[in-house]
Length: 359
Image 1: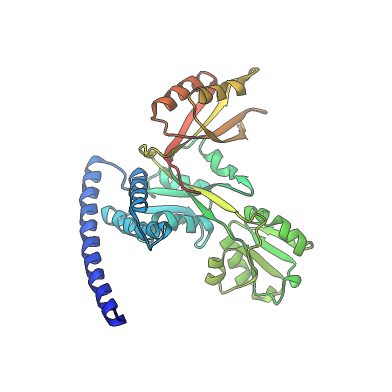
Image 2: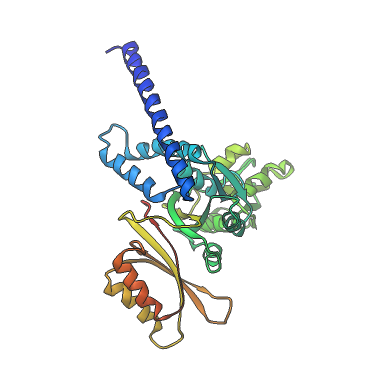
């Protein structure tokens, strides 16, 4: 087959694909109408997980599973927007890692709304101005994002999905050389992820905290008079957006630096068979209390994947414990374990069950 014949075949295939995509879109519109009549949410994490897993299992190549997921992410994004206009709140401004995570999860066809802090994201979703929110919850280098955890104590919102985003941090500036920089701007978490590199290469530079990596990039771009003195830690996307150059690439201390993000909504997800559940509780102050809360999970053969403590801020030396476990809260064994756990708790709240994301 020559190139012209191959291209004609591609054109014919494209026509068929286009017809099928529009047919799929019409079916999505019909589903959206039924959901609206029943007062159901448009985004269905369990269905998304089911579709992607089935397609990747059926895929025989040469497209990779990652390519299939990326393609269908946009197909599903456009379908969601046809069912109902959807707005996603995220920790902004544009080009932050949270913005990138939101786009990775929901695609290009939904509306995005930038928030200046995590509490604003929760408020946006609670008040119904945004349908979903995307917030960081933990980083592989620096651990939990405590502000996000603290918000769940009072918020009625649920976790309905999660995703992981590899994080590469870069020293970005318009300075002539790294050695001329004496101030480095970025979000505190980003600076912490690059602590060892900064100490080794810019030991005398002042670290200047900002609200986000993008805000840091904007500050550097807006102050050209200090271009040889200031730099920021941010993403390649931020460098491109603000016409800055990369002085030093990939300066994060951990080679597998990754942030886990969660999607918050007014309800969690249906079981998929490959789920994770998050909960928070406080224990009654007595000897053996921490031991007793672990026993129900061991008895039910439930794997705990994370346990994190946070001060309650209501009473000195009183703590909340955040726990993730494998499985859905509606599974029989999980229901039994949670019922037994409640006996040992002064406070217990299931934050949500949702499809477990691949790391």
